[in-house]
Length: 102
Image 1: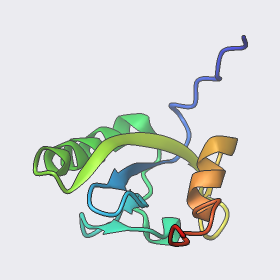
Image 2: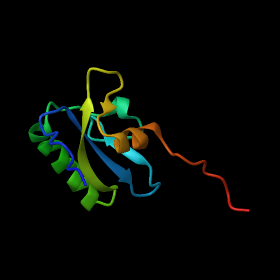
Image 3: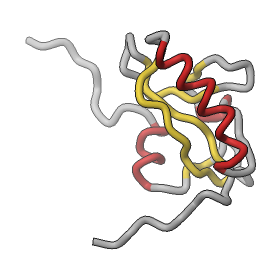
């Protein structure tokens, strides 16, 4: 199995899941959460992201979100494009329709 490349020097955003809805969310500039990566607070690298991650961890302790982590993004695009394929899928939204059970 190949190791993932080190991406610490790339721009980063914080992502997590909303505890109530399960939705993928991104930490915004106002320290809130948005389902839209376009509203995410982008920092230049993982080192700068440490403060954002600390804010996210505090909100995780308050049961607002769960499992926050930094992801590298290409910030030359609008909205920022996640570098990793898995994160591109998460940013694009649910891959299944939410239909009620019969």
